[in-house]
Image (cartoon, rainbow over all chains, first blue to last red; front, side):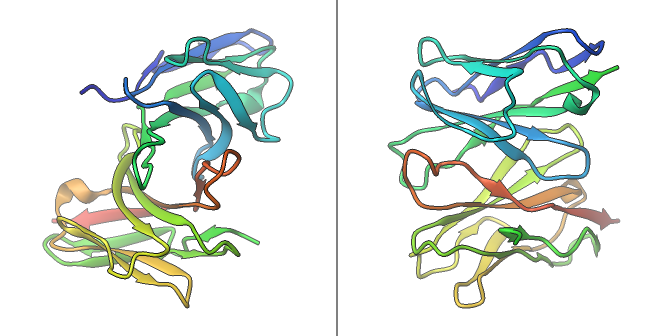
Length: 115
Length: 117
C-alpha cells in the first residue's frame, strides 16, 4: 500500500507565472485535502474533496487558486499569476470516510518558491 | 481565539528520557478528534496518535501516549524513551463536528523537539 505522493517536490517560479501541483492519494481513500504551510507555522486548510466533489473551500483560497479532482482519484492544485506571498509548502492529505477515526495521511508536500 | 495552542516553541530532551509536549484546544463541539503529527526536516507530516472526544481511555501507540484531560481541554503528547530520530516539529491538530464541511484539521503552531545525545 503506497502512501500519498505529490509532484513536483520543489518548484521555483517567477512572479506572475502559473503553477500546477499534483497529488495522488492512497488508492482506497475517497477524501482528499489540500493544506498550505508557511515557514514556522502549522498547516492551514485550503480545500477538501469527497470523491470528485469539492465540498469545502477556505477563504484563504483566493480566485487565483483552483483545485480539481476530476475522477475522484488524483487531484491538482493550480495557482495562477503567482505572487511572492504564495511561497509555501503545499501539503496534500487523504482519508477514508469508512475509517472510524478518519485519520488524514499526508504526502511529502510541494515546496513553492516565487521569485 | 486560537483553536489549538502549543505553548512550547522549542524543547530539549536528553536521549532515553521522557518528554511531554503540551496542547490545549478550544471547541464548543461535543464530538471532536485530536491528532498528533510529527514533521521531520524533510517536510512530510507523519501521523502519530489519535484521541476521540468520547474515548474514555488515553490513547497509546508504542512510545507515544496522549494525556487527555477533557475538562481542561488539553491533549498532551508524551514520548517515552526519547531517541535521536524523534528530533522534529510536532503538531497537535483537531477535527471538529463531523459533517461535510467539518472534516478539515486545525493545527497548532507546533513544538520543535530536539533530542540531545
